[in-house]
Amino acid sequence: MQRVIISGASSGIGAALARGYAKRGAILGLMARRGAELERLAGEFKTPTFVYPVDVRDSAALAAAAHDFITRSGNPDIVIANAGISVGTLTEFAEDISTFQKVLDTNVLGMVRTFQPFLAGMRANGRGTLVGISSVAGYRGLPGGAAYSASKAAAISYLESLRVELRASGVKVLTVCPGYIATPMTAQNPYPMPFLLSAEQAAKKIASLVERGSAYAVIPWQMAIVARLLHVMPNWLYDWAFAHAPRKPR
Image 1 (cartoon, rainbow, N blue to C red):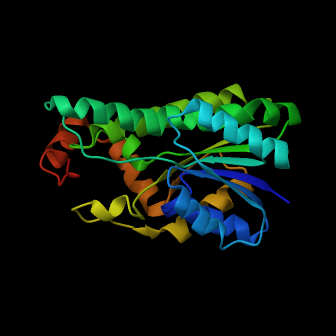
Image 2 (cartoon, one colour; image 1 turned 45 degrees about the horizontal axis):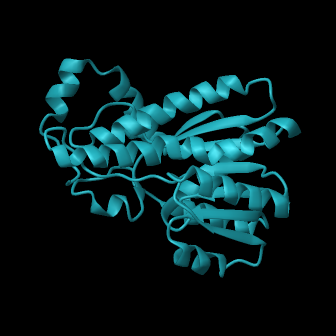
Image 3 (cartoon, rainbow, N blue to C red; image 1 turned 135 degrees about the vertical axis):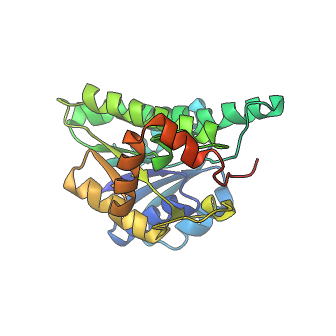
């Protein structure tokens, strides 16, 4: 029986992952700020499920949750750092500085805090998988989304460093860069979202990547092509193409 930790589990990809692993009979540790939503989700499952209403910006709360899960169930086999936020930001507004801080703290350091309490035990066991949910937005800086793009670019680099550090340990690291996924977070986007996946479709693909022992993936595959093209696009062309692109509202 697998033991799976999922942050940001109260909705979107996190909730879909929880449902998918529950169907497989996994023991679940679900983390999110909205405790009532977690309890409601856990009520759907017959598999053992532990609920932790924590904010990934709170190191002490995450450490306590990890200790509780390990004490009750043992070290997890899979830890999925899925918690994240996306908010439109503009550098010219002083009030957006706190928003930048919140996005980076949640999307980057929140990932570090999610993995850290479990890593020593996983390394000692010589097995396990750490899954970080980044984004295609980490490939290029999106206008109006500087904080989000910066956080996802940082997450990609962080996960790569972690993967190399753990190469000989038996602990795998998987970086997942989704394109557009139908979640409450993307529901606010005032622009077209090509190759949109449902949260359930994304969760199935992520679980499959974990099973295969993949190290890096963009989903869906169509967005992988777009991401690669954006990555190699000359700056002058990228600037021209995106200077007046629709932006996420502040």
